[in-house]
Structure formats: structure tokens, C-alpha cells
Length: 211
Image 1 (cartoon, rainbow, N blue to C red):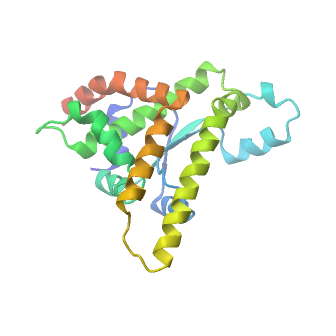
Image 2 (image 1 turned 135 degrees about the horizontal axis):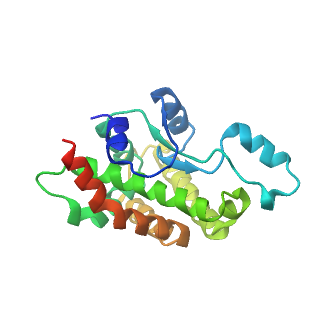
């Protein structure tokens, strides 16, 4: 199943959804970006206007969107399986109550991470689409977690370059899991998770009824 078909089947929000080509996804992954699904509060063109604006606090975005890869569901999940952060396992633990013989774990996972981004879309709307307010929310916590995650990746890559080709040691796996859990405790992320969990049942029923 294509991600696009799945999302168009279950999406009841008014969020603008962009399906990135496999080439765009590959470029992002090649640049070290680990998350192929993301919410952005402004597109590149309008971002230039924002950066030149003197009164950034009152700049309102007209171009928020949720980006997903135009891939199959399996191809998308495979990206998460190979990202080395443990986020897939952590998320599946959260979603275990939604798994069943009639419902693919891959489908459940993709629906959840999409709903998480819808949660961010709603957060942004509640801030009147003001870019600075959204970007400033929890910025210190987000930056600290990002910096620790980047350092962990650097140390792993250095180990591999030294000749230890193990994709992820037990110590590294534990560290990435810890950092992923810390990330989910950031209030903005925790709120988006809460939104996703509250809307999972409705989305799964909608998907099941369209089979």
C-alpha cells in the first residue's frame, strides 16, 4: 500500500499534506535527516520573507504543511527500522494495544506518526500560525536533545570508521533509546503524542471500513 493512499483514506483534518518524491526523501536522508515525516510551519519561499521581516513576533505563516514520503508503507517503515535511534521500537511499545491479527503493525505505526504531525499542525493553528511563537516553544529542550543525539551519531560513526562494523552496540542502543524517550517528554512532543493517541481509534476504524 502507498503512504499517499493510506493518509488520504484516514485524514479528516484540514492540514495541508505534501507527498515528497523518493528523490527528495533520499536527499534528506543522505544529508543526515532521520525523520522522513515532519511538520513545517513555513515553506522555503515564505521563510525568506520571514527572515527579512523586522517584526518576526507577528509574522503569520500562510504555508504550514505536513510532509510525507511518496513511498509504500513498508518502504517508509524500513527507513525507521534502519535509522539507528530506536524510535520505531519505542513507538511500537506505545501502540501495542492497537495491534491485532486484522491490523498490520506497519499501518498502525504510519497512521500514528501522521497523527502526531497533525498534532503539531493544531498547535501551530492555536498560536495563530505565528512562526516565532511555534519555533520558540521548548526550544532549549529541543536543542539540548538534538545536540546529544547528534553527538551520539558522531561517536557511533567514528567507532564504525575505526573498524568496528556493528551497526549499533548494546550501549549505543540504550543511549539512543534514552534520548528518544527524553525527546518524547518535551512538552510540545508529548502534546502531539497525546493528540495522536486520542485519535488513533477513529483513524483505524476509518481505515478498516475502507478496506
